[in-house]
Image (cartoon, rainbow, N blue to C red; front, side, top):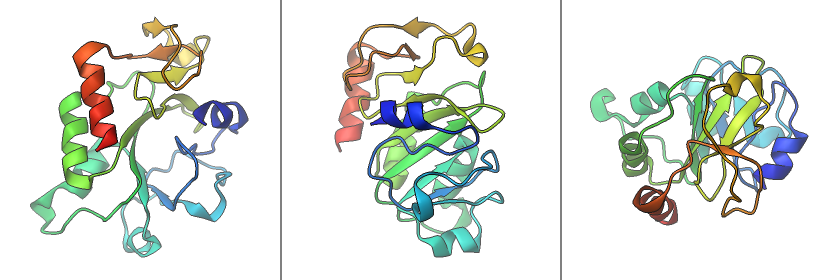
Length: 180
């Protein structure tokens, strides 16, 4: 499904990683176009505000720092009750989320975690699919220079190259977390 969305995306449009698209709160101001997901996706450029809370999202897309703040019990509140997914958004060149961060997000939100790299114009540069075997990318994307690409077919069926692909026990651990 990400393959179709990846091909149809418009610059500046948030791309949800799998279909169907649930109510999703996007907590960064990186996107300028209304997503093709229609009213199911709402961009909250000021982050997790009372308006975002009232939207009652089933999924949240945000930076790792925003998600840690949302999931932290330091604020005295429970994490938002999402039911579908957490999407970690990052810029090109930023370090990807670690397995310990992914595990922490799972423990706090109890939903699958996806990672996406978003370019300066709000374009999807690389995104994780439901197989969680790296981030699908266009190998010719200039913002991904220096990344190591894995050109083997992904378990999701896509043949596009992936960055930060996992192998062995680490991949099994990630897939098991997704299946929970």
